[in-house]
Image (cartoon, rainbow, N blue to C red; front, side, top):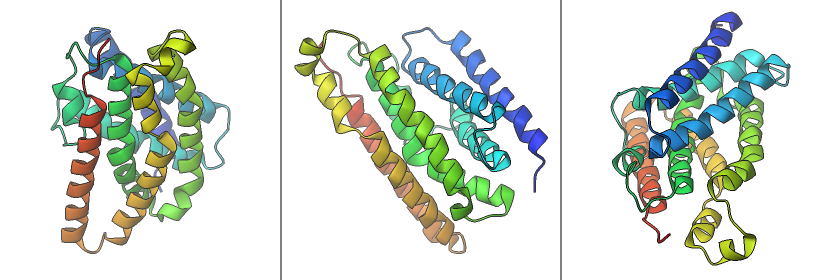
Length: 224
């Protein structure tokens, strides 16, 4: 087992790295929009860890750090997987709205990175995905609780006007809950394939490509 103190420090480091990125990019940059959303989520996870909301804090911290590291490697200049490529390619497109940038980033991170982070955490802790299910669900609940706030912050306006806005339909077509469920299924599949590296690699590539395709659709330029 890895010491809890190591991961407590790492969560703070994750938050610091996201804040440093926020200071680097202009506010309207598409990756910056996602980074602000993710920073809010990570700060909330950190706060709940400090208040003892997680029964197994070590498992929760490990999963949170492994999850964040996959985004941070890309954001800080590492290789860009297919799932993240649309957001980085369209991050300055004038026809894409802030909510679309946020959704594309959330889609990439949950649809692809979360499944791999569960496997990473299981390897770190020497456990099975089932042992992390409670922590997975609690982190997911935090994301869901923030979803409405994200919508209000990034798509303000009178309700009657929102009904006719294409952005309203786009937001309604994507589901955080379904993305979480798919990520959990993908994590279990990847864990089951861990002794078959060729199949695991192929599954991972196809997952990456499929999530990237969905992100590209979320970034379709819309009329203002």
